[in-house]
Image (cartoon, rainbow, N blue to C red; front, side):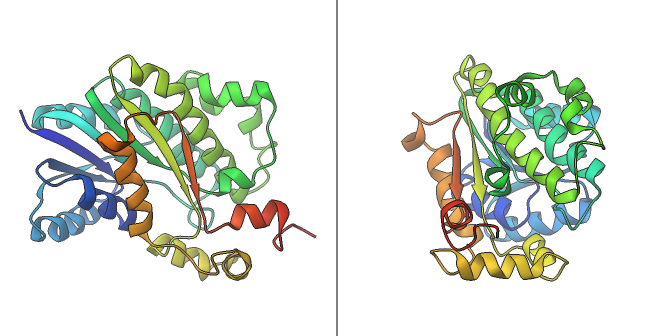
Amino acid sequence: MREVIVVIGPGSIGQAIARRVGAGRHLLLADLRQENADAAASTLSGAGFDVTTAVVDVSSRASVEALAAKAMSLGTVHGLIHAAGVSPSQASQETILKVDLYGTALVLEEFGKVIAEGGSAVVIASRSGHRLPPLTTDQNEALATTPVEDLLKLPMLQPDQVKDTLHAYQLSKRANSLRVMYEAVRWGERGARVNTISPGIIITPLAKDELSGPRGAGYRRMIDGCPAKRAGTADEVANVAALLMARDGAFITGSDFLMDGGVTASYWFGSLVPQ
């Protein structure tokens, strides 16, 4: 039976990873908008990959369950690339928490039921999760272990506690890495692995939205003030993802890989320290 790699959010990063891990496998490309999935399918099929598309709303349990069922109908689910999400400039606090936080937890739960032995997943989080000040032990545990349908009821995620869309995004991305740690234990019972990558500024359409939005000056300051002195590329993220999803990464699970050109280091200990 053929091996299936599910790509949720087949944008620049999702496609770059798919190119590295999808050869000889079937790619199921899923996006909220059919036209986005179709565009990615056209590019990847034109490059020789075997592709099917689907529509998915990661904030809907029924939709994610349907995607998992479709993936199983195509073969054994050997891999998952979860790169879908919305940024602080694209959505409200409520939508960010629903898509980036709840949606990621839901995807991990449902695909944790169908991932094959030897399978692996990469979740694209963000360096923003590392910018958030430390949470309490109880808050970390709540974000990691609270049943999915109760996550958005947590006191720390209520409107009076979440200051703005950036804060919602930071909380969501911190929750992603915590949730992956928790899910790595359950995935391990199936002989599968799951990790997060927390990229910094990677030049994608989403990043370009941020650079031209109200936080653009802050983004440019981060690029200029980090040790690397530049933004990253989707291919660089894909290089790390390929390691994590391959046999060479077989001892890595439940981990978060921060790759941001040193922005976080500079934020806490360098020129980007808040004044």
